[in-house]
Length: 162
Image (cartoon, rainbow, N blue to C red):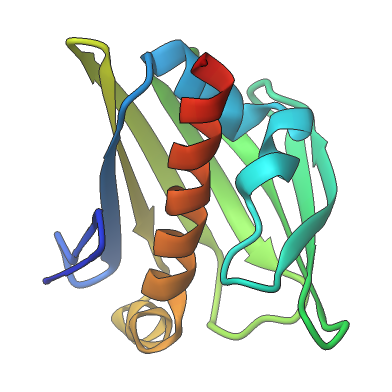
């Protein structure tokens, strides 16, 4: 479909969006950056001007997470979900619902991490309840926000390894 910088965005099915990027870091380090609140706060902010101001994670099957981002004009966006599968450091499956729903239903995300020669490919596939919900998300600034966040993650992983 498209490639925003180093992020490849595809639509594997009529209800899914897949986001992929390769990071120059071991899989365990990438997994930790995705699942530890202290590490997430360094990079998981979305587009420039946004920051993660609340992050709670209970990383276990049946556990939950809660994120709140603040934008440049003081706007807040909250999201919560539940972990359905946790297999460190290779796979996480979780639901996601925004506090103020901007698409119908719940999304289920599957993050898969594959390491090869010290680099980690991260592919997150998000399945929506309908094609219409997926299409609303595709029309949003999702790709730009993910690309910006993944750029910050790449910088964080590089600096953390030095």
